[in-house]
Length: 167
Image (cartoon, rainbow, N blue to C red; front, side, top):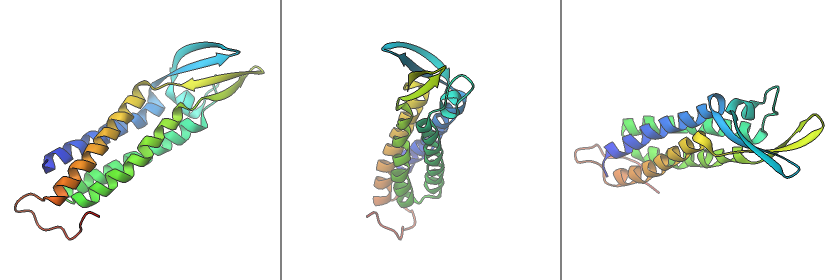
């Protein structure tokens, strides 16, 4: 694998993580609303689940997932900078760290209860488009990590030596 593959993974990872982050504020999320064993499915604005609205209480897990998605996005941008600077050792490490908040983003799907007119409803957010974008970002981070390790171990011919080694 050459440096071009790492660059493609880094750019795609940033784009997909950005889309996953935007999902929490500007998308629709499938939810399942249950009361006394009866359930109904619907699509609601993601921002209503993340931050709450007049009709629905926000999910603390979705709010945490939103901030984790921002952290993963920032780390992906840092990895992208290192990739384009040619420092594949640091890019390798940052890709690995970025995968942690990326995976934790899925906590937004934890069901939570809301009180509407004295009745308790269970709300279960679904996977949706944002989850798909987050999964795509994860695989780009994973392949970027693998490819960066290979490029760092075998730098291109004529490349200046890297003082750091991969542990």
